[in-house]
Image (tube, rainbow, N blue to C red; front, side, top):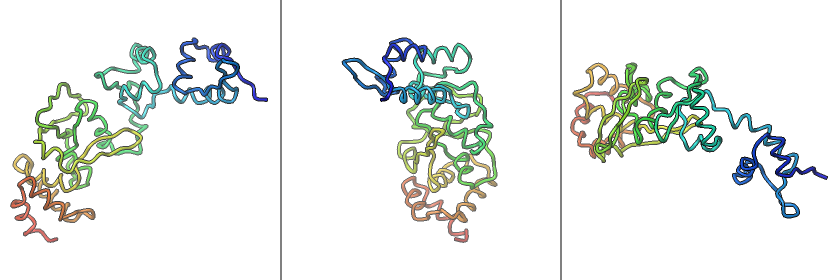
Length: 255
């Protein structure tokens, strides 16, 4: 016969208060059964919880910024406050905390420029990787920008930006902001970036602010890019009113 524990016994074994154990039961972190009108927990279930809890209550060193939503999945407000006091976390705003035990070497499977993209939403909600930073992502240029370039809606305010990585906002109109926007998700989090064709159209639109060498490099590399989509490029260029300029470049470049 399977051995079961009462809530009192579970409190003693976990060294937790009754309110904490009842919260675990309510959140279904520990599965319960009802026997003779009282909650009980099987020995197997309690052992499973004890085994998994250390993993659950340790912040991944490979994650530099953690949303309050994700923190609350594993920690109480008291625990979060305690970690702030112990200099393990630093509150950035109401939505995000910085992990002060972050180790970038834990991120060895990712490119460093892409790691910076995960930080955009921390400081610039709705921010989208654009221009040079997007061109680097698509291997269109060997130029490594000193700042992460981020597109945001024209009516949005940016209150605070980090010292590192440096971020430069570009204020786009509603149409330019939404066109070609895609979401990238992974276990590290997510970021927004413009697709290949939208990146080219933005380069054309901002050509007067871009050095000639990089501009030519980006256009030439797009023409040779294995995933290019000229039909989509023309559709975007027409919507953003840069089709005439695009056609001039395409006439002199081998396709």
